[in-house]
Image 1 (spheres, rainbow, N blue to C red):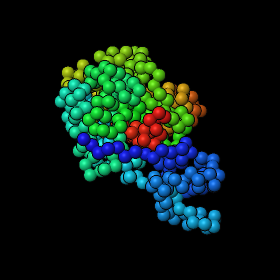
Image 2: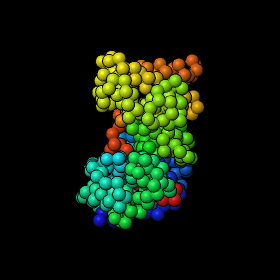
Image 3: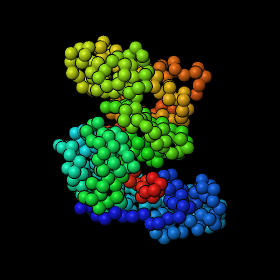
Image 4: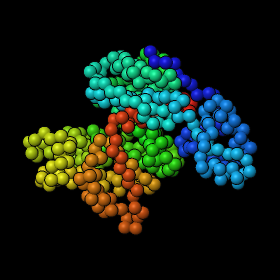
Length: 388
């Protein structure tokens, strides 16, 4: 069994706000913390004192602190969290693998451990996660929690309500893993976990309006407004894009309605289209290489996918008006081959005078998704289970 959880000391709302600000944006000077949170110097001193005494925050040397000290006439050093004071385990479960990571308090990956998923029996999967947690926790006594990302519908951050990839319905995964590890566990839809990680520590940090769009085995979507992820309200986490029609004359594939984002953009459906046209079962990488070499059928399918992606990005930008859209997932190699097609489609579906879409591409693997799950555990620790 893994080591007992390393808990976060009880904090007042004000202390928690300071700790989170430094965790996400630090190191920060006291002046900057006070400005960001609208606090007086005296109030900030009162709030930071217990955080420093408990070693949640420490003063760190920085060149800028000298100038600030001279202006204020007293010593002032930036405050930062002790990133390696606690560790967090994150898992991404696919239909045939479990990808595991351990991160610091600031979500930096310090170890990876992957295992094949040879069974989908919930109890045996939980036992596998417990064994992997032991491996990842070795030599790290400050493990504070576990986060698990699963494709599908997750209820109350604890129960896998439905996961088509795993064939699960109503599986109390959090309880099963907690019983075997003695650690607090949070379970969430894998895209939601990825969005949280990018909001706190990645491309969306500090942004008010931010969108994550993932393409790969499926299509994932996450919306951040006011710096907080908008929770799923219905079936978004069970197949976003399956009914979002981007080309009513597009292909009919095994998954998704004709011309839907899923039919045009997901790797399985792109492979299906190429196989149906050529009779060859090519891998995703082989299809991209063939399209880059201007082989007709692969090039046509990839061009259609690029046009669909550009249309989807433009529609999101038109309705949400985000400061940034992050494109991620195992299918982002599409941009390397069809980037110009995507850009043209975005422009064609936007007002001529509309502000350019800030589209950032992130090449991510399943360890990034596991890191997202670890960030869930970080949030539960610092926000409190009731607020996370």
